[in-house]
Amino acid sequence: MNMAWKEIKKNKGRFMILGSIVFLVSFLTFIISGLANGLSQDNAALIKDLPDGSFYMDANADETYNLSKIDPDTQSNLLNKQAEAAALSIQMGFLNDKNDKQQSVAFVTSTDSPLFPKVKEGEVVLDASMKDTGIKVGDVLTNNQFSGKFTVKGFVDGKKYSHAPVAFINSENYKEMYRTEEMQLVFVPGEDKAQSVAGLQAYSKKQFLHTIPSYNAEQMSLNMIVWFLVVISGMLFAIFFYMMNVQKIGLYGILKAIGVKTGTLFKMMWTQMLLITAGALSLSVALSQGFKLLSPDGMPFSLTLDTTIQLSIVFLVIGFIGATLSGIQIKKVQPLQAIQQGEV
Image (cartoon, rainbow, N blue to C red; front, side, top):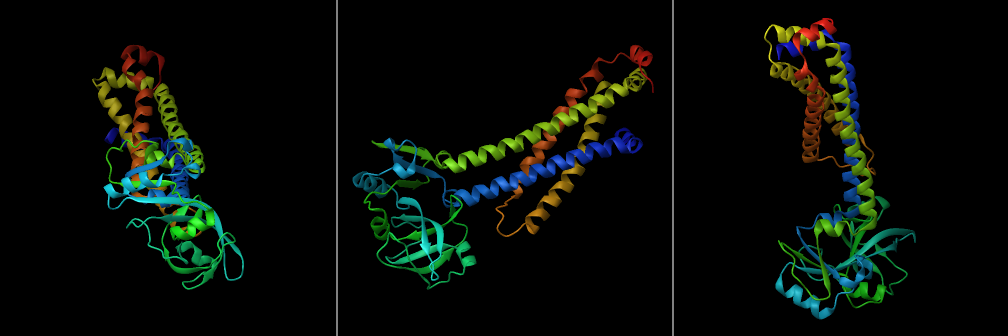
């Protein structure tokens, strides 16, 4: 530890450059990860906030919930086996406010279940983000496909689907609007293993999320960027310490000649890596949390403590691997040969 710290103080410039690069890469990674999580919530909070369980969709729907139609008898059998199970349908649409301005929403209806708000005919429960458009409890909204009117009953927090606020409506109103008698999905919470139901395909919550085209493409792109940045940080460590080690071949030869073990030299390098990474991560974590507080209200940004810890651990592991790979040459150093080739 003492030897590692002395070298850092002696070569401040070099280690500050590495620390600055690790800080910038990790900070960018945290920001993109926060945006990915925020967009994930903005795209599918309706589904993600449900407990773990199984979704059942028409096997002939080709993994597209819009094309799914659940047979009423099959639906009844599934619902009778689990008190909290619910049949639900989702359709994108719009509502006209009191100024006759269209507001895009995701209409959701379900059978009676504690997992979804209970809504009477002619009522609607909206995501709280609709308050920003000036809509209040008691306002009357309309839809061109619905013969009646919707009265705003209340609001719920954080219910989004496909980047649109959710509008919970009664199943009878939904059937009139979309000219259908069948529900699209059945959700059974708490199932460790999905049942085998004739004519239906079962999905876990994670699998169902990946059937949503916009969610899958969006998350895949952002997560790929995050992991590319993580790999780049590992390469930076490997290249930096490799170049440092090449310049210190003579020094390592002398240290080995006076009895310093190879393991001690590796520990020195690992200590330097840990000090640099810990400092850079501490600063990037603090700034990324500050970014969350300062980001505009409309920006979907969510950087949880769990995600921050996981990414920090990944950076430390990648840094350790990169530094270790670059230090393999230390093990091969022969004292006499190194002293002849290098300079202290």
